[in-house]
Length: 212
Image 1 (cartoon, rainbow, N blue to C red):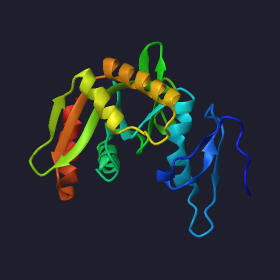
Image 2: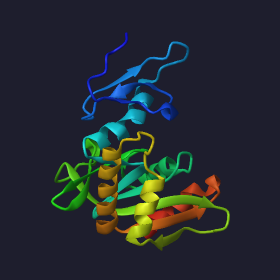
Image 3: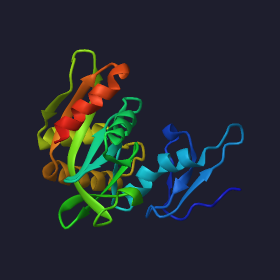
């Protein structure tokens, strides 16, 4: 059933392969069910959520995340790079998996925090973001390689891995401010791992050691 968009609503970008709109405040969205193919509600929500969050002034990083006692580490990368697999392996090593593929962040009293799922909650509803790792697989490395990044390089990587498809100037201004605050307040690293999925167990152990 067609749903009439409210005044000021933004059309969903064609590249996410959904038809519909998001209200200008990000609080409502409508996705039309395609007639000729299976409609996956969870997948549709995941595709729309980053834009809805951005329109509300929040930011969602394209990454999976795990929690250590000191805080949350997020692994940011393009799809199919292995960030979810790495987070799952770190979960087998005793860490709490906080997010899979999309990691919401919010600014609280000048600090970047990540909401925790119920199974990972400790003393509060969220914990600080203490590391942003831009994950890549490379045939040129034979061991985990962690390289610190400058704030400027961190912003560039966040923009590269961000959700740019909804071309709304106000949205981009908000996202850039959030990225800048993350880059200034959270240590960032380039995380290169061997391009050998058969070695994901040893790779995860090396990453676990590097996080300490």
